[in-house]
Image 1: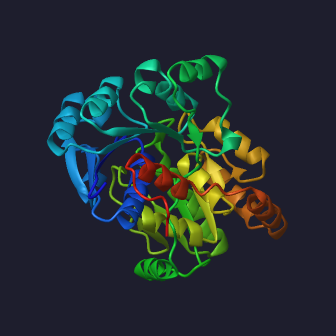
Image 2 (image 1 turned 90 degrees about the vertical axis):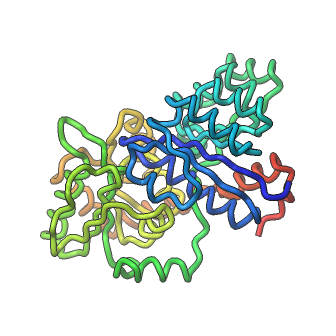
Image 3 (image 1 turned 180 degrees about the vertical axis):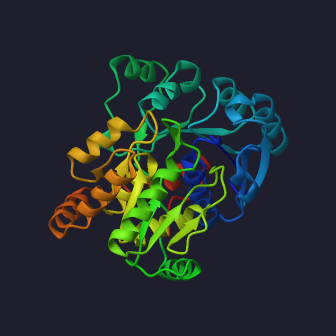
Length: 358
């Protein structure tokens, strides 16, 4: 299929940014692999990053799941060959996309979202379902879910793991120079999109306070990414490098090149594990505690509570040479799943493209 039209509909809300970042990673890879691909996004006007999207953007009043009228309008207008719902969408939106000739991919990231994707009304109109979690965090399907898939002659959801971009050395050098950083010469702090609150506190503020404590104790350079949904002015701090928002590629390069990292226990934790990079992780939303518990048990990360002093103590543990060595071994022993390559092969198959990837 020449010049396919591909529509991404990620969750876009003030609480998180992971779905959007994942979709942009995938969109960039598609642009490189499928020449002439015409890529579109539907994003909420209420999120700041919607104005920075590099692809053709259609604006919904809320996250697109709640704006079926807009979704239908866009589908009718651009006639996509493929629609990718990243943790988003209603059954009626899936059905409308199929009715208009599109292939449909649904991406889920935890048990609740996977279950939603396995409702009969969605299964009937879904061509592929990816779970962007590694196998060790995903429980097997129930017998009822397997029965529904068999009756409707649909494949089981595929656990492909976190979607990460391919890192080119020139890009890494360029991005580090852009922020005035050296590989292994800084510690990275990021709680997510910047909109999360726990116990009345902005989680990003607690991470910043932890960075201040750690910098004062150790003298190490610290970089805090507050997130595009952070509602306040950034601190004016000569000791801490404070950033509001970076692109998905820039973020993952910084995550990969940092000496250590303090992160939320969502998608960024799984990305860090996939990169085999030790971290301190804090559960900042209700779907994260069980994932964090599993990852701590496998020695993939060190957990901490949402307290600047506890985070600082955990980060000091991470810098202990013995602890760091054993964690690196644990991370490097796990099998990487190359989710991006798997995803591109599936997309090319659905679009009837050649599956030989560069």
